[in-house]
Image (tube, rainbow, N blue to C red):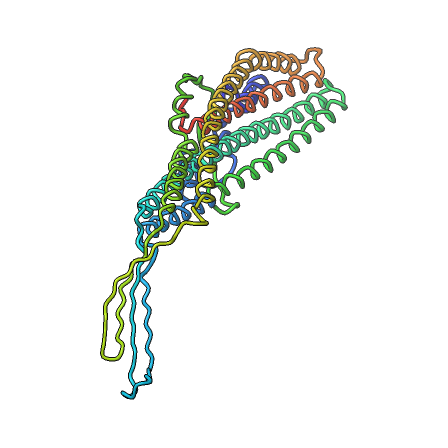
Length: 424
């Protein structure tokens, strides 16, 4: 951050001659809350390992591997049949017995097992691509929330410094009143401003805690886990090529890759459905013992595709294939639009940061400096002018922080829609 609340406090104390050292102000700039130090890379690593949504999807990857095992297995087991009977023939030769045994097996001759295996493998690759895309989305959410934590930490730091500064202003105004240089209403006005500053500090502290809860949830940790976010909350110009980003997204985004694999799956489903137009034969081996005679007889049976030629399954698979192809084309166009839109948002956010940084911060600083100096030196400047200048500076500083956050968030969105990290 270019200008902080600590800088504001330095100006004021320099003007009133308190003689506070830089070391003391460095002490004031220490993190506002206790707990572990957490970088954005650590937050992303924790979320990748512990995020509940990702863990659910990760477990789901095992389903596809199990389906591959099933696809590679012969689907139909052999069937065994047996019968045994007592026979009392008309001819008087006594009671005899009859026994028969048969073993049959359906044989796939249309390459169905190969098609099922290819479908299962494509489904695994599709699931892995969707998992990769889900991880990119979670990383984006973690990064954006991390920057919100940094934003609230900076706001809280500024709010605390403003509260300290206003409290000092109350004390200095009271000294001027006791010396006969300030009316009583200026003391009340300064005290009212102090209450507003303390109220704002409490509000920002509460907002910081809420956004920490959100980040802990994304990282799969207990809500109340305390930490201090550490990272560069500064502006750096982002230099990237829009066409290069579009090309990368079109070739590498996980959801688009998933649809490529889904197209392969759909094509395999069509081939599998068509393979059943040729019926699978059933081969049997029969053994029969009748009285003193026995015989072995192999047989083969073949279903007649008279009524059901599998047209319903074929047409369903073809419709699914066309649907996936249309989804792929649509997503390709959507990704190109998303990348262009996110890129423009980054440019707009960067211009906003630069505008405030180059044209507003210095003016607000100079104005506050002049008004305070005049007031403390006893010139004809009322306290309301001092408070107005202070409010203007705080509003400008807050606008700068929020613009900086908007820029960071826009970069995160661009990274998410492209599908890779873009370092500044």
